[in-house]
Length: 247
Image 1 (cartoon, rainbow, N blue to C red):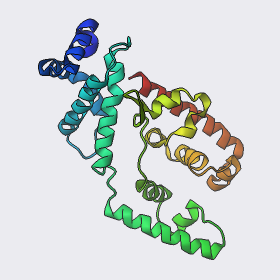
Image 2 (cartoon, helix red, strand yellow):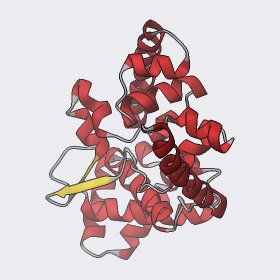
Image 3 (cartoon, rainbow, N blue to C red):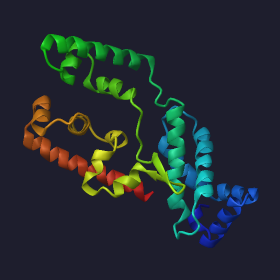
């Protein structure tokens, strides 16, 4: 039974009691939101962690949502809780090193840096990913992974600051930025849903700030194709983000 299928006033009363220190009410909130937490946890399969462990972390996020929920606003608790649960799990994964970089990736990252230095001196210009790939005989995707792995990940649900105790996430900011949304987020999560060519186009355009002409030359296609694919992919990613917001 989820919080959505029980009486709204009853939920608010449990929250009020919980915020006053009533442990039974807190336990009740967890009990009634088990399915909600599990629905969020399912997103984090295949991350190398037991889902039961992530559920415990998600429950912590749920209780933080209970503590911070403002009863003066007529907002569904589940709408407020989901980003809090996701954020708690994301922080756990980040802090625990989910983004734990394997030794082989670290070694590749070192080789990429050395290759870039060598090729820059040899070619008298900053080498392209393709040139580094050819030099190291390593796929471009692996080079990108090695470069990105050392960077702190940014999640659309990660809290960037708090306003009067309420977490403000990147997703909240994006909702206020209209067409500029893609300038304010690491597209890592959405990029994982794209095929290789589409992912490379977005990587070059928004991570490397290349022009469409530069991307076209790198990938061996026309600028018109780059423009068409970019427009389609941005639409797909925006739809993906909007679906995330609906959860």
